[in-house]
Image (cartoon, rainbow, N blue to C red; front, top):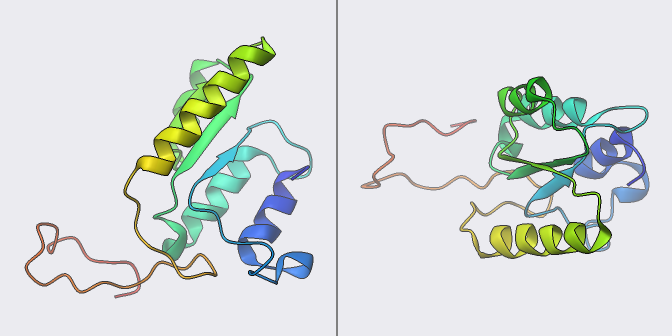
Length: 134
């Protein structure tokens, strides 16, 4: 993706991204904060404005190490935040660790469109927590 607006179009499955066989919905999202058209904060706000997307882990990978940017990213829904290393080898190693970690994590299943799948909460530890859309 070149900008945040493209990322939102992808997540919505709009335009050229409508074919989910070609453009699968992500199991986790890595985004930058500084992007043209719509920045990473806008992407996070879009994701969190859609309760059915609330289960998609979202990671910020940004050149900014500003404490205010980090705090705001978490306030609008980031699950983790990493400052980009300047060295390409270090960046590749960091991306590898991020992808390995989130690929190993248990995350809720989603429909091919990215919508959260409803589960039956009978007898589960978290049954007191309502599901969005339930």
